[in-house]
Structure formats: structure tokens, C-alpha cells
Image 1 (tube, rainbow, N blue to C red):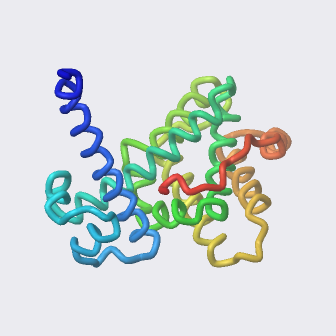
Image 2 (image 1 turned 60 degrees about the horizontal axis):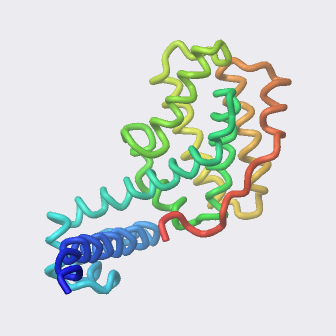
Image 3 (image 1 turned 30 degrees about the vertical axis):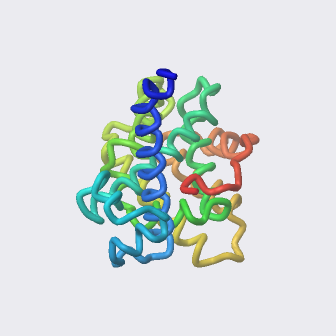
Length: 217
């Protein structure tokens, strides 16, 4: 009979983790809807948790929304790591990650809207997409695949392209998202030093399947 008592701290930790995850998911849904100016009570109702539970995890709404964006960035970044793990060429890894990210705007609209609503996080964040893109750019430069003497400026161009592409695809639902993404990726690869033929080749290689469910869900 002592076993359940010894597991009580574990049960409490799991319950707290579930409550925090529910609050983060509720915040992500609100961000995707463009509704961040809401009362904490509305957030806790959406998460189906008590008001008091909110302050066990977050000091205020701003902290929660920051955590929600960071979670979305981390989840997508982890997925990209998984889908590029078998690639030895960092230029190919960069191209594949950008091509997959471009496709998420249609396949994962909630995640897309979270990323687009906090665009500067793509450049400034130390987690999620930005450090992974920088990692691939720097690795490709060291390998002689990219010419990127200033990774900071390269990241400005890459992040700006990713954000503008996402907004363009949302504004023009008639456009083919895969074709548009691959054309932008090809231009970026050429800017980073690849030949037109090699950039075109990397953008025509088959991609792994990107699940259709929202990472933020």
C-alpha cells in the first residue's frame, strides 16, 4: 500500500505538466486567432483549468504568450531536425528545412499564424527555427558549400524571406505553396553561393512527409 504514496509526487508533477500544456495550447489558439488582448479568465476557461492554476505556472499573460511562441518554435524546429537527420550535406539540410517550413503555412495554418504573429522571434530567438537555420548556414560555409561571411546578415535575409513567403501564401490561397516555396528556396541558395544548376537540383529532390496536424495542437 505504500507504493501509491511514494508515487504521489510523480502524479502531482504530471498533473502540473498537463495544466501547463493546456494553458500553452489555449494561448497558441488565441495567438493564431489574433486575440491576445484577452482576460486571463478567458484563457483559463479555454484551457479548462482554474484561475488559481494559471499563477502556479505564469506570472502574467505576457509570460504565457512568450512560452506559447517558444513552444511552437521548438516543436517545429525539433520536427525539422528529425526530418533532416539523415542528410550529410548542410546545404541540402538548409534547403530541405526551408522547403518544409514554407509548406507548413498551408498544412499547419495554426502554427503558421503563431510564427507569423511573432516574426522577430525567428531572428532573435535562441530556440526553435533561427538557431537551426544559422547552424546549417555556418556548417555549409565551413564545408565550402555556402559563401556566407556574415551569418547575421544571412539570417536577416533568410528570416525575412520565410516571413514574407508565409504572409504571401496566406494572402494568395490560389498560389501553389510548394512551387512558390521552392522558387524562393532556390533564390536563397543562389544568394548563399550555390550555382543555379545545383540550387535547382536541391529544390527538386523529394521531401519527407510533413504531417498535416498542427504542431501547436
